[in-house]
Image 1 (cartoon, rainbow, N blue to C red):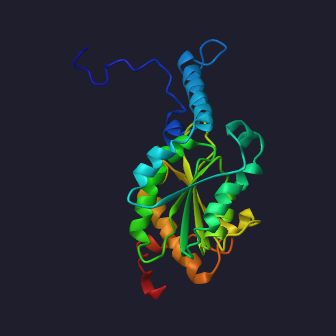
Image 2 (image 1 turned 180 degrees about the horizontal axis):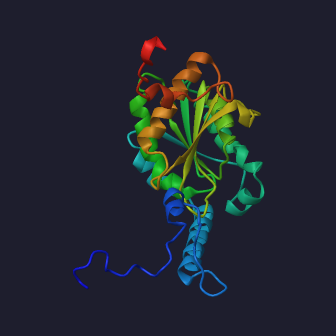
Image 3 (image 1 turned 135 degrees about the horizontal axis):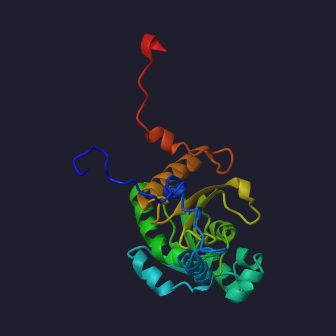
Length: 264
């Protein structure tokens, strides 16, 4: 019997129909079951992801460490009108306004720069701590021909705080690097919002967004910096950002398609 072909018994266990789908997404699909509930491993993994997301929202930003990581770049520190993390989470409107002392300091530091970078803790200080300095350094290599204002480090800040900062600095363009709302697959994702002609009252449709900058399958620092540099130079050339400025950097970087036979 051992010499007969195909004599090895087949695996009696059913094939996993979700295996291919799980390999293509970070979503929790096909977790299986143990009796009437999910397997204990899946429950524990979910609880861990939820705890990491909560920690990212409530973690304080280590401004000293961030400023050290940004050297030799000059930095300015500001805070919003939100008195602390609890008020920041309850009152998004306060996170969009500079407090009086920060506003006065920026009024005295007007630069007339082409670009002002604002690093804001947002909803994931963890993401900012991990990625912001590396991304800024990568961007600096790609926009060396532009005048850049001192990097502004903002605590208890929302995206729109960058409009206030950019307006007071007299910058043509503001780039806000901010911790994105944590999810159950990634708790440390960084986003970038670019606004031409920053001033208080700008709306979201007037911005361009680069999202999903992190080390778990998101954009790399180089990819995000390439996008930011392309958008920044295009915004300064065209005098706009937002829905009218399309991100074509990936299409321009792609190799040209071969011509069809017959000159088509």
